[in-house]
Amino acid sequence: MEGDNHSMEKGLLLVNKEEKRGSSETTITSLLIFTTFIIVSASYSFGIALGFTAGTMSSIMEDLDLSIAQFSVFGSLLTFGGMIGAIFSATIADAFGRKMTLWVAEAFFISGWLAIAQAKNIIWLDFGRFFVGTGVGLASYVVPVYIAEITPKNVRGTFTFSNQLLQNCGIATAYYIGNFVSWRTIALIGIIPCLIQILGLFFIPESPRWLAKENRDEECEVVLQNLRGKEADIVKETREIMISVDATANISMQSLFKRKYARQLIIGVGVMLLQQLCGSSGISYYAGSIFDLAGFPSQTGMTVLSMVVVPKAILGLIIVDRWGRRPLLMASAFGLCLSCISLALAFGFKGVPGIVNFTPTMAFIGILTYVMMFAAGLGALPWIIMSEIFPMDMKVVAGSLVTITNWFTGWIVSYCFNFMLIWSPTGTFIIFAIMSGLTVVFAWCLVPETRGLTLEEIQFPRES
Image 1: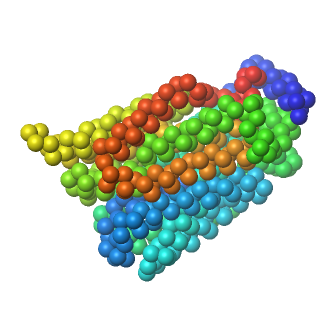
Image 2: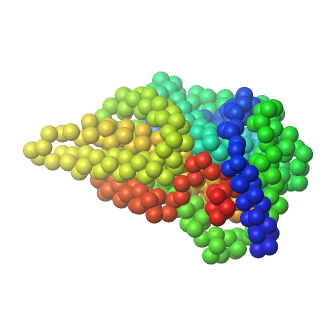
Image 3: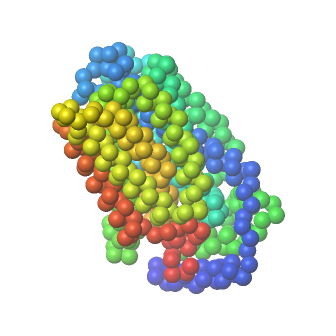
């Protein structure tokens, strides 16, 4: 294996030298845009699932006579299902391809949304939420990986960030229409983007890197040429992919914990863990409950949130390949820290004699800022970083591990969130503020900058 790696190092050095002698930025083709749109279209359904519980909590509890504990279980089953889907996502994507994995994910999405829409009791409601979560878990790994593998290096961050943009569109939809339509109707709306993706998958190509791994070299070249344009010179990129794939073989879970993989594993697991420990699942799922607890009109709050999450995600999409991953990650986490501090202060001074009651306004500002800053960076960047830092031989086991880490932590946070608010809203947001601050430190100390590098240059930094 070391001999193979040495050969790959020499090959990549040759490729990089040739590239430095002169190359132009790759043209963004209509096929690349269409393929990316189809890949991320199910992320719209994912976003609806994330925002589904925020404005429907009281109506679902009333319609089906649920307790707070039962609803907390229902809400957390999205992340629990995501964890189950994550266990198999990388393996399915590696064995059967990126497209097949998305088809399997859509089967879970559609069956889950139908179960929720038709639910007459808690059992069907929970089954539906779990199925949607399983689809989300399958898609959450393969979508950013798929996009990263088809896009040129100079726009990879922007295209991969479109995953977060579509998620925020779905969240905005759930937040806004939740004020006007029933929760069953929202579930049916969640099926629409799934149908778009099912049809669109017939018309988009498979990942060229996966085709190369399967020794389908001619197909790899054809797909890459179509994605880059008829006039594009794909010789260097094709050779780079072939050298990388030829020198790698999938490693076992046990081998993953060897010293040489430690840095990549710590970064991948760390960013996923911290994303959830900042409280993102709890605040996204139960924003309406926080407004009610603070005394701010939840309908007004949810409407405003629906109006800001998409523009903020668009801003992240624009600047991710200009600022870079690391600065944007730190700025986003710092914004979350300040937002959680404001929320802690808002609830800390609630009802204190002699102090003007500014809890509703300050809580609204805190949640608004939190959602905006999360959409602009920390929501998407861990998935972008995960899709970039792991080479082909690590993608299956490492990808599964970091995705499971994300969903397992999200399940714990989303289940405990309502009980934490009952315990102490101030204490809850102080904890999230501390974790957001730790994310800034983690990014500063460990997360590399990957802007403008090919996947092979990122994964084998000595050659860049």
